[in-house]
Amino acid sequence: FVGLFQQNCFEKKCRTGVLQGGKVEDAGSDPDCYKEFCSSKEGIASNACVNNQIRLFNVNESESLGPYMARYLGAKWYRGENYYLQIDSHSEFVKNWDTKLIRMLHDAPAKKPVLSTYPPGQDFNWKDTPGFKMCNSEFAKSQIEWQIIRLDASGPSLSIPKEPPYAPFVAAGFFFTIGDVLAEVPFDPLLPWIFMGEEISMSSRLWTSGYDIFSPPSNVLNHYYVRRHYPKFWESVNRFFKKSIHNDLVEIVIKRVKHMLGYPESRLELISPLSVLYRAEDWGMGSKRSFDVYLKMVGIEPITKTI
Image (cartoon, rainbow, N blue to C red):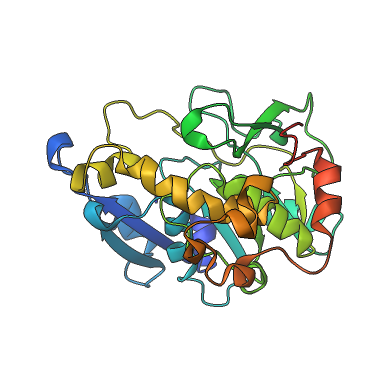
């Protein structure tokens, strides 16, 4: 919150939606970040809380449905703003992050640009340094990831480019684009517990809907990737039901993603239960560009599982 609501941002009436989950008995209660910020000197000075610039939704751990559903719920806070920024929690920002992102977006040579990458970790010298590019992909080898396509960032540019470089993929933990995206490429509300698979599905849906993806020329935020000894989302459903049920559930739901991406083992006649594809066409590929062309562009072959 402190990094988000810098002076230039709160004066321009930035709006922030926060999906806050917590309360795990065996790990201690999580702090209420909203209350802590609003009572802090930075929060009071920003007037963000009294001006209703923070839209808050608290979710009990027992009711959480994983990161993709958090993206879906987070998008419900959109109220017609010009731009849309999605980030994970546990992040820090550079000064004037908002004006820098807007300038980068306008510098991108496309009508509908998306800026996205994996932010650098907190141990990097990251502030205003060359950004990482989203270029790498592979088919998952773990048996509990069902050969879904995993994405990764390549190294940063040697120097900060004059305009955002093209990239084939978006990162779910940080992307910035025009507000129209939520009407044109809405989040699928029927992907509970999905983690691996959300980024390749959003990347392909964005591109086929006419959006071009770019990496930010320089870093505007970082992310704390490792929080040891804190519970993870996949442990919650196991805790409230039975051990390993998370993997059993994802094995069913991931068929919806793989069907959209053209995996032969997820053809319609092989899907069971068929209800996993309920209204899948409503949150499928766009109609502006061919998905086959996208696969050729990024070099992914779902049939042979090769890159």
